[in-house]
Amino acid sequence: MASSVHFYLSWAKERMDEMDAVVTSLEGKASELTAQSRGAADQLIADLRKQRDAFLVNMQRRNEAGEAAWSEAKAKMESDWNHFQSTIKKYVSDFAPQFKQQQTTFQEIAAAQMKSWREAAEKIQAASSELTADRRAKMEATVAQMKLAASAAEANFQKLTKAGAGSWTALSAALAESRAAFDRANQAAWDAFKRASSDA
Image 1: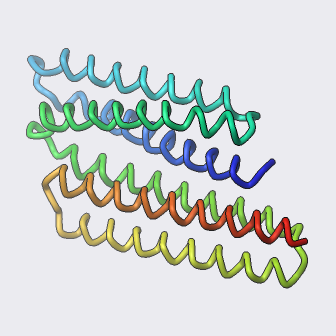
Image 2: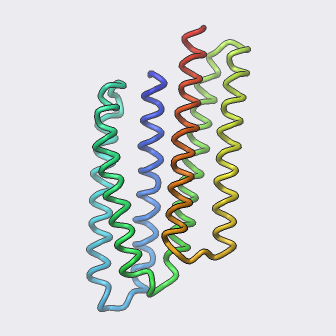
């Protein structure tokens, strides 16, 4: 499988992991809402679940696709992802004041992001095992850089958790920053792998 396809798969899986974390977190805390709010909250959670399921179907449909198909699909998937994020924001603004959901959801999304960082690094490392020793060493350095960026993101998450940052805007910004760093590190690693493979 082409390295660029690996990038797209990692990109989509990272977002899928976050979607799962959000839906699970919100479902787990919905019982804390007042009876009056529960119906509207359940509807938003159902909307999030539906969006997540559609994203998964789209991702699975592209699983064996080539780079051109992924490149074309990514714009639509990005739009779907942004819509999911907007629905989360609405949920938080409407219902989070009733309970301490923001911190829990943030921690679960952060854990999902860290899982994606680790899995992507492991895939790149596994793919590099087929390279010659000198090229493998270069890839090890790339993987080490990716792990270092993941550690920095994790440290930032821990700092926010300890500080008890209350605003969803601040928490969401940290998640977006980490997600963007993941995308850059993931792209750089697979580009490096592609160069190393073509030089072989």
